Image (cartoon, rainbow, N blue to C red):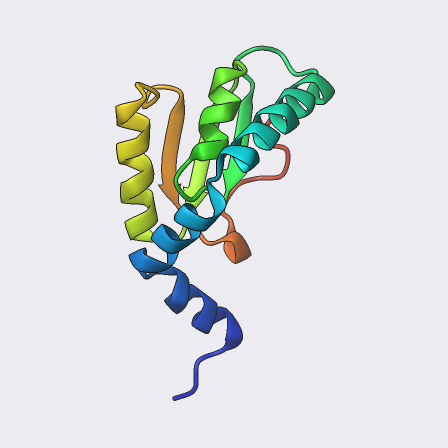
Length: 119
């Protein structure tokens, strides 16, 4: 049986080593500095009340979720990869953010949330 392109992508992204390699290549000091500035701009442009609920789809290790928390938001972070969610859970525990970020396993192609469920 031949897998669809979506199934192939999902199968590849389920592998923990893919995410580890991506983190090592992508999480550079320059990128981290850029994203801190970018999320300052995002928070300012959202102009949302404190503790507004934000959806982080394809959350990976929750780096962006944690940036949102630092700016006063509550976050529902979703990813379809179980190994990635386990790593995200550990990252949140290490930074004391488990109360501000809720993790769920969801597929970006078939999210189960109602329209306008997030601030």
